[in-house]
Image 1 (cartoon, helix red, strand yellow):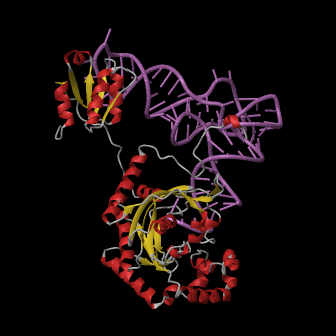
Image 2 (cartoon, rainbow, N blue to C red):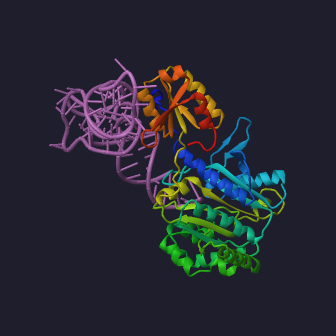
Image 3 (cartoon, rainbow, N blue to C red):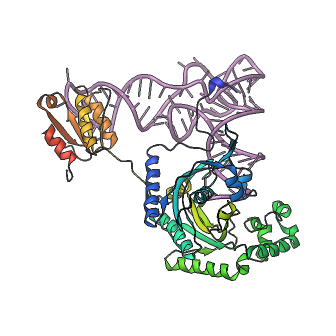
Length: 423
RNA sequence: GUGGGCGUAGCUCAGGUGGUUAGAGCGCCAGGUUGUGGCCCUGGAGGCCGGGGGUUCAAGUCCCCUCGUUCACCCCA
């Protein structure tokens, strides 16, 4: 309550990404971008907030993300909006609005917002890299999309990532299965955990995902969705699993993999980083959503995609000590002890030629400036003292190995450092 | 939303059972070398000990509240 004591801080569950860590973020996005581009995906930016109905209809009111975790608000014009809690629904909304040619292959890198208690690998604002393909139910796309994510993790150097895969069936076969499951759950209601003993009817599939011994016991002896897929879904699933093996992606069937959003059909999958000690070891996940476009008011159109949590991926990289990214270092650091005029013109010239050049400020001593030059990681120091200033020259000193220096004319210096193949 | 741990310099942390001017390492700045970084030495700056209230002659230390943070549950990237 003490207003005068206020010192600003990033809001709960949010974080500043500062250098040098931000260089790693840049590299992560760049790697994903180049891969997605090679796979034929184009970048899509959607607004960070949407009409709240995009999420209510898309993800389902029952989804926790929607019912209790959404940052929703009314704007000054009385519109009910929400910060996006996940990446797929907005892209689908954009697809419906613009109707690009299909299959529409989009990738994105964007923040998502969920009001939940932060903990290891879980934040109120987190960042996802993802792709969506809208307009085809070809199982080869399931394979392509999963293979992309899998290779992304591999390229980062992650070795302890497990791909879990399942099929959620479709509107033709899932309802009948759910009915069977309900009958089974009802018969064994007393054995379910406290929570699901009462709530199993509202979302029976969720019970499959419960880790409590009671629920596991009941569902283990109950009907499994995989055994009740219609012929088309079963064929689709077999095609995906076999195709993944053909392109070198290992997967494990997980009959209990039930994802949180209503829109999933057929293929669902999740990547777990087994190197992470924390409970949040899902670094990516996704699936097919053949009914979502229609749910959001578009023509019946199938789709599939995934999202990858940047923070969690980087945590996994830390756990496996891989994908370390060094901050870029200057090629030349200009030390000018004659007032700074030479430093000003030299770095300007170098930078205009595309050379990473840095300098010291505040007219400090040569010793001090060289110390800053050393810390910057620069390969060379370009020293301008009284002698150099008087003779129009520059002393070049190597900083990354044994001291070694020579004095050149300014012209020679610029030629050497602005041309390719310099030392 | 529920429960536990922790909040002392920019960072990582010391500060038995409450007792005078709150410490270290690293980092930062300066000097040792009036033209030269890294190593070393010396010095310096930098803390209302998260905030508020209470107990006490006395609180960084004990109690309550609050905020923040962290871990777990729930759910998820």
